[in-house]
Image 1 (cartoon, rainbow over the protein chains, first blue to last red):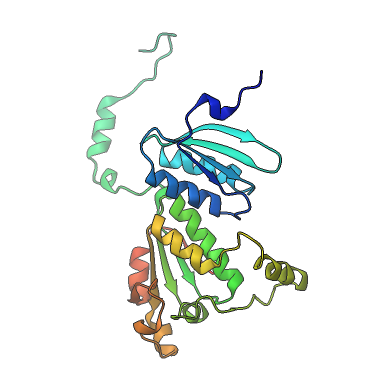
Image 2 (image 1 turned 180 degrees about the vertical axis):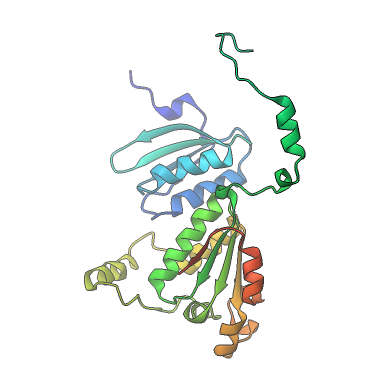
Length: 84
Length: 168
């Protein structure tokens, strides 16, 4: 039985940034994190190649948690937990 | 003491002596935290967008950005003219230029000035106009887009530019 990632955790907010060019998806994530509470999980969908390096780099710098990265057909799903 | 038998020898006395030495007090920002300073000279849309993307990256990573607008970049930042067509650099190829023109009508396209407004909200971006260029072009603060916070001379810019300076 396949388990969906979102069934393993409560995703507080889902941002569909597919089609947005770099650095749009990252900017959307940063804005969403600011509006969220600590321990909230935010999911960002991005088709931008830059996000694959940008989002992990930012998450580490900002001290949050990159809980999961799921590769889909033509886009990637990033699950970020606000840690502080 | 770690359990596996190895030990790191720390000379506590020497460490304390070094920490008291005057030169130990000069705290230098780690390179990846230093502000990024950009001198924007170019006024074409491709270069201004490239500069905006760099600012976005710096802002995202928590690095303050200092921007000094000169010449054609300053002209591009005049009130009401920011979204005008500023053209492309001379090195633009015909095919490349056409791609960019097509992108503009594509869904998800955002003008660099709009991206810059958003970036300013998430990061510490200070944009000032070079006093010399203001004089050369006969401009005053009221002619400029509100994103430009003020006018300054080069010495003032240099005093804030403690990190790398990039000329675009």
